Structures are given as C-alpha cells and as structure tokens.
Length: 293
Image 1 (cartoon, helix red, strand yellow):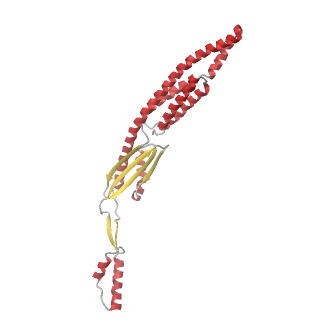
Image 2 (cartoon, rainbow, N blue to C red; image 1 turned 90 degrees about the vertical axis):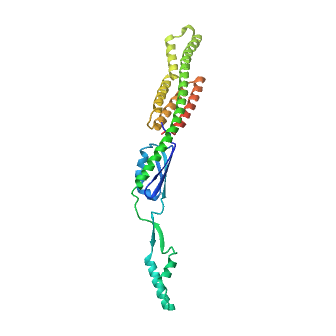
Image 3 (tube, rainbow, N blue to C red; image 1 turned 180 degrees about the vertical axis):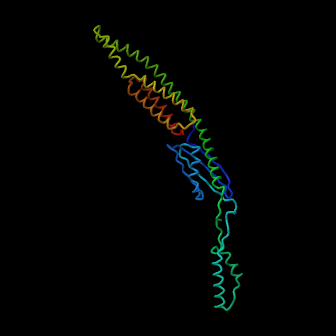
C-alpha cells in the first residue's frame, strides 16, 4: 500500500546543462501531472509525462525542472560588422568634408567596441544531443524517490487502517453477541406479556407468527454478516501492492450504508450506541483512505 503524498528529487548532467528535478505529490482522484519546466524542454513534455506514469499511478503530481548552464560554452560573441562599417565610413566622410581631416578607423573602432549596439553576447545555436536522455533519467530517478517516500507513508496508513479495522470487527462481535441475547430475552418477555394479557386463550401459532414478524423487522444479522465480509475484503486490499484507494473508498461507502441500516432497524440503546461508535471508526478509516493511492 502506498500513500499519494510524497517527495523526490534528482540531479543529472548533459553536455551543456546541470539538470535538477523535484517531484511533489498529494492526494487526488486521478493522476494529474503539473509540469514546471524551462521552454527548452517543451518538446520533451510528452516523454516526461510518460516516464512519470510508469512509476506513479494516482495523485496530483507537481514536477519542477531546473536547467543550470555549465560555463560559457553555450555562448558566443556576435559583432555587427556591417553596422560598424557603415558608421566608420560615414564618420570618416563627414570628418573629411566638414573639418578637412582624416579619422583613423582604428580609433573609431576602439570606442565602438564598448557599445552593446555593436557587440552582443548571445546563446550559441547548438543542440545538446544528451539533453532529453539526461532529463528523462533525472525524471525517472525523482519519480522513484517520490514513490519510495509514498511507500514509507503508506506503511503508516496501512497500520492505522489495520488497527481501526480490528476495532470495527470487535464492535461487530460484541453487537452479534448482544443481538442473540436480546432476541431470546425479547421473545420470552413478549410471550409473557401476551400470556398475562390474554391468559390461556392465546394462540401459540399466532404468537409465534407475530413474534417472527417483529423479530424479522429488527433483524440485523444480515448486515453484520456483510460487515464481516467487507472487513475481510479490506484486509486483503491492505496487503496488495497495487493501487487500492478507489476500491477502499467504495468499500467504506458500503460499510457506512450497512451501519446506517443497522441503526434504522434497531431500537435498543445498546445497539444505537454501538452504531455511533462504528460510524466514528468508519469515518477515521475514510479519512485515511482519502490519501491511499
């Protein structure tokens, strides 16, 4: 059993980048992958999602990818020679025409070299052949780390669910024992009251028929039996390595329905109190199940 809450991180390197990946996950009805990645990785988004799906099956998964450039090997100097040539030519022409003097190109170039309009530092148009492989490797490692943390928390949830399941089973056993005693006592008291009221004229067959009808209306053995079956199914799910969150959620709804039926069919205060206690335990189970993958 695994939780849907987890965290994992990984680091990898390609030819030009250091790649850092963090994957955080919380509970969600389905698998909802939210990517936060640089634009350089937009073309790899489908492959990234597929890699995550191979490890994580359910939950809201937030993926943060950071690229750090390694040195300046990816940058290059761009000099606008045409613009500089035009400016030098114009300055020399105008200086000669206006002032009858020559401006050496060397002195002009020394001044122009300090202006960003003529010299740029820009990204080199090269491809990093290893980038996709490195990114997917980091994604896989981070997803596996996230999955490992889910398993740790899942073990804690499994223990809590097992304890609550045991407590619920104990209530069912106690309730079953009480119902058996209650029905026998009810039958005896019902028969005595009718005998006191009607004396020897009582029809035993009619008495038994009426008593059977009354007992059947309040019979909760079937609901208790189904609760026992549900708990057995739950115990099996708790040992499963597959995602069982949705199945457990459905099972809890069925258990809650059975307990509600028990409460509506029964009038003894002991049963009413037991129903309240069972509903409290089921609610504790439901809260934990919400975070099971």
